[in-house]
Image (cartoon, rainbow, N blue to C red):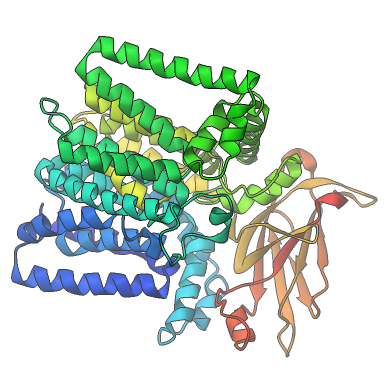
Length: 618
């Protein structure tokens, strides 16, 4: 790679580090800093290639072991390896396949950043509260920028890391093999830890094993949570399946590792793991003989139908599933096949689907914004009247992606996948099964949100596909359209917001000092037509109060002085036939709970006012 290419990769890597550093805890940053020092020491004494050959297997071994420290540490460490060693072979042109989606997300990020800076001293007033000598406060101020002002940056950073992983593992088959061996060993250790945890033989509990997971008898092991454990275990099995020599198959010691990984996936209670395991069994038998493959599929299908029928006509299966000591994965798998419980399973999935579709309808062309699904789930579920329990995603990667980036973004994502050669990869048997497994497992949840899963899936895609050298999608016209669509998508998103939450029957969310919100234009009781914005402060400055300037895209601005914590309603005239009303809300002076109440609060986010919404009064 040329020096210019290396410089570009390093610059993009530094930008990709911003959201992870902003969201990292103290221990995650300490671990990352320690690894960075070690990398620099090795890099000064040896060539980049020599360091890579030593670091890659260690990195593969560590991936299944360190996520319990924090989800961001995996991303930070992976990006630090890229920053120090720049392990991309060839030329920058090898990344052309990723350009459409990369430019779409980049356009959205730049538009959001420009929109934040457009107000000058008012829009970035919260930066006056940042002091670099006080890292927790500086980090939370940076988090305000990343989470609320430029939310697309996090999605951009994760896509950048996925592209780097795919390209690296595709071009360096020798290092990919070393990495998979390290991953195989680390997965074995992680699986043993999960099995010991499930058996109650560990006298300590890690922070990732929350009381919620313990109460439903699911273990997280060393992963972010039980779902990540199940998906990570099955993807590790798939990586090994793709990398082994088909002439020799699985060796003796590998069967022991595979058995431990299967056990860990079962105690994790992940039905995605069971789905991936079923496809792996099919792929293994298909690679040996077509007759064996057909026979295996018939046996599995008949067995599943048999379990369903037995559960329908005999009571002992229900008693067995409810018995103490039955692994959670088996219990959840049987419950999914249970005919009497089928309506409950369908209902729970229907809730996820309805929320995802309703959120997509909020902005069908450009979505509600990358990484904004969780922010809208509480209020969308309440409007539908069917939100039961904890729901924070669509339980379907594709539906979540469609809701966040809309039809335009989804089409650009499909074009990027086509340029990578995803379709062509199905022409090879092992690659076809691996891609089919990844595609099927993403139907059951947004598993790429887990950084450890993101990297391993990148390895799996890289080893199963080859980028197309020529494609009509790799043209300057397509690239220009991608940037333009990214900029337009940012104009269709709210900005400067945090997620909705319910407090005493009223929904509320925090706004940053400079926010852009959308308010429904409707017929108000006894007040005619208009849009209603209800705001409330939590902190009132001693001198002058809190001032809120509300600027509609059309019409005169409003200025409100808040001298108490009582809610204040602002009515904006509008025409319901023109759709929702977009408002820019600027709060002065900006404030931080950690500075307002240093004795009782450790929240150093830079905030404005709360937006309130009472669905019962609508």
